[in-house]
Image 1: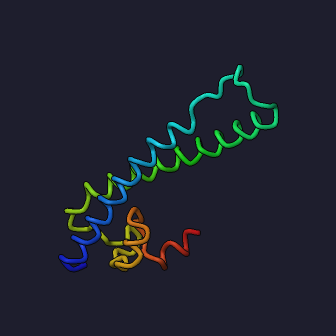
Image 2: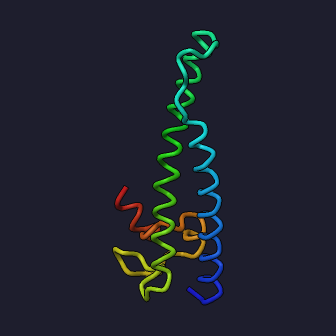
Length: 113
């Protein structure tokens, strides 16, 4: 990975981290408890509970992704950054831009799946 690619990837990760932090704040608002004394109909209340469950799952995934991205950003200066943990070949830059938290090249990821 060239110095320019590494810099571009680090900036991309930082942008994703900032976006996720904002998204997490929004998801927390959407997962607040639904008051039982709310003057909404039974079906509307059930829809609200269902939406809350979906938002809780989304919040959980966002927190996990944020944690992974922060870990990757800390490891960006390591000499083995961008190398596949299995075959130790460079992970294609395009793959890292799409899934920056990956530690497997496409070939090794396919064998794991």
